[in-house]
Length: 366
Ligand code: NAD
Image (cartoon, rainbow, N blue to C red; front, side, top):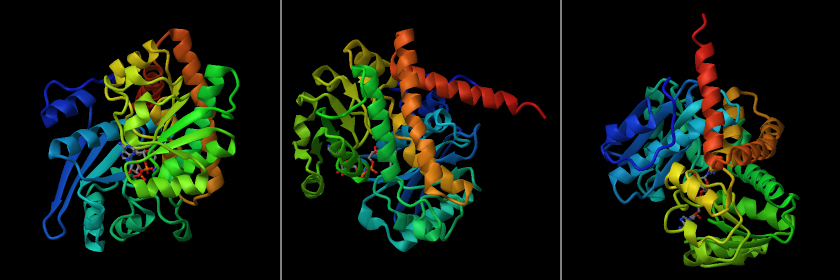
C-alpha cells in the first residue's frame, strides 16, 4: 500500500487529480430524478474493514465543493477508525440539497444506492441527518448504523461524540497546564448543533466559562438558555479572548486568515477537518504555540458508537468505555508530538497510518 501523506490543496482541481492525491478507492455519483436525490459516496480505504461514515446533507455552493467535502471527510474517517483501533475503513456520503427534500422516497432511494455497493460502505448520521432518517434508509439496506435505541440501535451518536471531545479537551488541558481541570477556563464553542449543545453541558458542569455561537440565532438562544452559556456573534470568534477554541460547526476554520488572529492556548473541538490544509496549518498552529488536539482523534466517540452497533448486540457501556480511551490516546499523541517537535496532527496521522500498514501486511499471510 502506498503511504498516506498529508495533503495540501490539489493544484489539479480535476476529480481524478483529487482522488489520486488523497488516495481514494472509489467515488460514486448517485442521481434519482423523481426524488431530486443527488448524492456522492466516497470510499477512501478499506484495508481495516468496510468503509463506515455518516451522510451529510448540505446546500453546497457548487458540485466541486461537494466532491471536495466528501473526499476530505471520507479520508478523515480512515484515520479516525485506525487511530481508535476499530476494524473499519474510511467512507462518507454527502447529499447536495436542503433538509426539506428528505421525503421517505428520497431517503429510501438513497438507501438503495448504498445497498448496491454490497456492504463496502455503511452509513450513519452526520450534519442534517437524524435517527428518523436512518430508519428510512434501513428499510432498503442493512448497511446502516445509528438506528434508534428502541429499535436495538445505538441512537444518536452526538452525545458520545461530545463526551469523547470533552475527554480529549481535558487531556489537552492536562498536557498544556499540568492539571486537567476545566474550571475557570474560557472556552468558545462554535456551533450549537447536536454535538456543540451536548459538549456545552459537560463544560459548564465542570465550572468552565463557556461562550457559544451559531449562525442560527434560534438554536443559539435555546442552547444558551438551557445551559447558561454566554452568547457571542459568529463574526467575533477568531478575535475573542479565550483559553480554548472548540470548533463544532463545519470544517476548515483553521486557515491562513484565522490562525494568526487566535489568542487561545488550545484548539479542541468536534468538527471534522478543522485544518484547511493539514500539513501547513498544523505547522502554523504549532509555530504560534497553540496546542491542537487532532479532530479525528477526539471526535471519534460517535464513530465508536455506530461501530459498536454495527458489531451487533449493542450496549452503550461498551461504546462509552472505548470512548474513554480518547483521553489517554490524546495525551500520548500530544506527548509524542512534543518529544519529536512535530505538529500533533502529523503524529496522529503517523500512528493511524502505521496501524493500517501493519494490518495490511498481516493480511498477506494465508
Ligand atoms: P449540526 O448540524 O447539528 O451542528 C452544526 C451547527 O453549526 C449548526 O447549528 C449550524 O448552524 C452551525 N454552524 C454552521 N456554520 C457555522 C458558522 N460559520 N459559525 C457558527 N455556527 C455555524 O452538526 P453536528 O452533528 O453537531 O456536528 C458538528 C460537527 O462535528 C460537524 O463538523 C460534524 O461533521 C462533526 N462530527 C459530528 C459527529 C456526530 O456524532 N454528530 C461525530 C463526529 C464529528
